[in-house]
Length: 203
Ligand code: GRF
Image 1 (cartoon, rainbow, N blue to C red):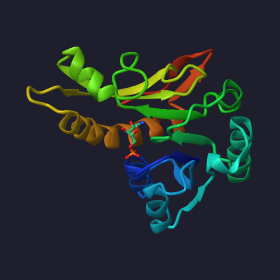
Image 2 (image 1 turned 30 degrees about the horizontal axis):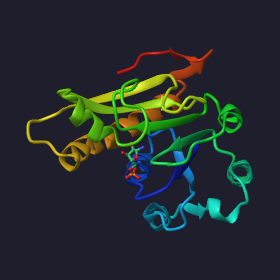
Image 3 (image 1 turned 90 degrees about the vertical axis):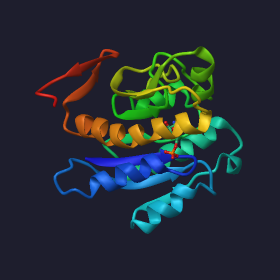
Image 4 (image 1 turned 120 degrees about the vertical axis):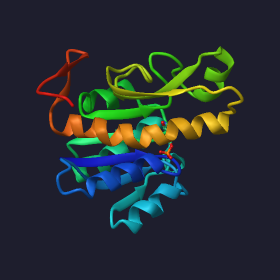
């Protein structure tokens, strides 16, 4: 399966996906990386792996719609089967999301449906919860609200700070995202009528 990855920053999840795809048995291939930030560190990382990496900066476009159109044009050319959002920090219109529904997935650093949106680690610490984690889900018009594909859980330890907690979660993200993409690429997990359908045996 052809996969495009959308990023805005350092791209460590993107890198985890690139590494997973190096296994010939892995059912997907990263064919392009797109960033809305021209200075995203992940762009250079992708290029160093020989992957086409392009910036489509919103400041080059007069409106959100025009920027989305440009992203869409880049995607139309790349023709991915699956789009992975990996730290892509820009909200998408319902129209854009609708175009890719069932074929676009995202990783979010919390156990959804808890702690949608920004600053999840700080909010988990404030909440007093003793567990935290990350979620890969299909993207729908509701931010961080689409059907859940897979989750990873970590403990919240006494004395944790945002830094120590986010680092613990990130390690799990790097395992979870390749696993979830594999399930989607193999067609073992699909989005049907706004819900999740599993088929075949899932280890
Ligand atoms: C990750 O924590 C991801 O879950 C969130 O943004 C962060 C991106 O990190 N959506 P990276 O760019 O993949 O290193």
